[in-house]
Image (cartoon, rainbow, N blue to C red):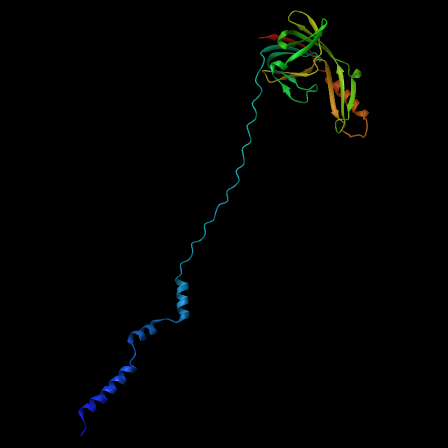
Length: 246
């Protein structure tokens, strides 16, 4: 005779055994849905957003600096009418707007326009005076002879500087009618309203140049060239100036 509780016990053992071998359905589903590692990495690469292209940066072209404006022309400093005569027989008359005097004897450096610098040195009657052009009636200039020029060289320059000077005799007549000898060595320039100019010396007319051959010693050929230049310049030098204030 079988006992009922033994049957139940046996049935319970079977039930427990079955329950121990049963798998979790949720974990099985996850394992089935997870892709292989290689496929997952391919999908990540494919889905990564592309970086936006870098915008090209335009290089700025250098801006050239504008050249400075030219200096203003010198101011007018006189208002005269001047009659000029030259050695070649020509004569001109015109309104002068500006007078300038060279700062050196040769007319190679700066030009001065200050009224205090525009005075001529005159000698006569046992004295020496300084007068402006507006204190003169006229000036006559007797051109010199290039054959009688005084020539010299200076070794202070490299190459040496050679100078030949023709002495000219200029006589100035002041407003009181007196006549004086002009001894101013500077060069003068008259600038006319029509744009023309006249440049001249009143005491010594020089010609200068550095030795073109850079000779080791005195180059007598340079003296010949300077005297030839003086002969050419003497052909049309200013020989008379008559000033009339406006």
